[in-house]
Image (cartoon, rainbow, N blue to C red; front, side):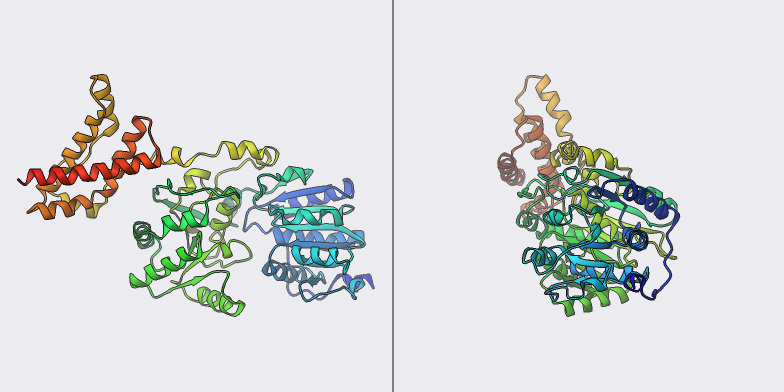
Length: 505
């Protein structure tokens, strides 16, 4: 009877790779030799096959121990994917979803897959019980919605699995809920072994001064949308797509629904009709239709909000565009991981970074000391590089299309920092630096224009160059506040227009 409860006909034969089998053996050693209420955390990169590993663990555990297994997820899509994977391993299982009011057939199954919120509600209402649960597996364990269920499974062995053992709640570190961390193969190792594709990352400097950080520790949607919906950022996005992604399947991540719709319309206006938008307001039917289109269209562009960071697997994606900034290391790995699946004709994929994320976290495939992060998450968070430090390394280069407008000017550069140091050493006033910069810009406009009107139009093309010079100057005088820089830029442009007028008199 127990054998029938445990298994059913396998859909396909599943075998573990060497590194997966090694991790499984390490996990089982803990299961065999640790107390029943031991909480173990297992890390393996996205694409490494966490679900495969714990599905085989479930099969062997039920076979050896004869006790039931409970698997918790935070999204319905993950419930279904996990259930199907378990079936592939011959594990008969039941999904506990909103339709399940009580478990009259509780004894017919040895394995249950549940949404955390649904299970919590059923347990709170005493509609379900979790008797004889020997092993509890928590998928995407870095989410903290699972901790509320720990009291119900305190006598079972808990195995949390995640690609990033860093809590989504900075006030609730993972080392408070887990006794130990087992780290699997690194991204670099999986690339070298041929299991993951290699990322080619292209970065574009973006000033993030106007972004605000919310109570969750990440940039707010509103401030992100204010930045990423402006025309300059939209233009930069299309430019990046045309330089590195054109004609290949592309997934764009945004922070905000409005931003994603702006992206959709901007690409449409640029002549790209092979684009669709997806967010969590779409119905299940609409979502399935869009994802089917995305799967079957080689040059498809899909712009979305973070709905596709988990529970979504489309190996044919060739370009990942981070059209947002994030302070979440987990989200950074999740987004890039959507493109890392390896195919016979896909050894690499592109990552376009429009949020200084690479500078903030380092390369996606760089080695990470997960044990250090697990034990000392505050140390990692406190030592994360700031936006100001990142942007201090920016070096402005005038775009080629703008440089052509000033073809009659041989030297367009002006070293603000060098000139500032010279004025200070000479005992001169620092404002002389900006006056000389304005003079050079005015001459550039006049030398490349037929009249004052043309010159003033050319001055508008210097917007980014002016902002860069003012930003450098404000750092030199140690007054780098947002309001002061904005005032300096306004004053600079006003004086530039005045000087252009004077030169044509």
